[in-house]
Amino acid sequence: MSQMLAQELAAAQMRVAMKSVEHLCEWLEASNRRWLVFDALELVKSLPWPNGVEALMQIIACYRDHRAAQASGRTEELKHSLTGELSKVPIMKGDQLEIEELDRAIRYLIGIASTKDTTWSIDRSPL
Image 1 (cartoon, one colour):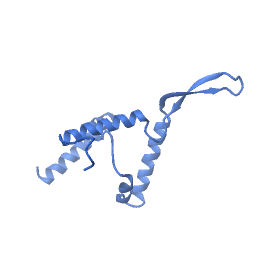
Image 2 (image 1 turned 120 degrees about the vertical axis):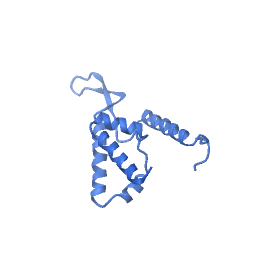
Image 3 (image 1 turned 90 degrees about the vertical axis):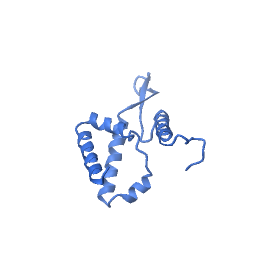
């Protein structure tokens, strides 16, 4: 495939992906980008200063705020200050991925690695 054709195809795919949240999610899944994995220090070094880094910080803040609005599935018991009654209160997600999310990400990435290199094994030393 010529470089020009590849660029046109990539641009067309991005136009479709940007139509809606659902289209973007479908594109991320289809392109094996569901879990974005990168060395954040390398990413920061590659971004234009300061605009690229500012955009990254905005993304991190949005993600943090989004997660803070989602229950983690765990609860804690709190005593009401006036009545003394105990009630279960949901614990919201934090900045870091929950263990279940890390597990899903690891399994997903292992699947991709196994597909790209059928001789790859998690037990083998890093490439």
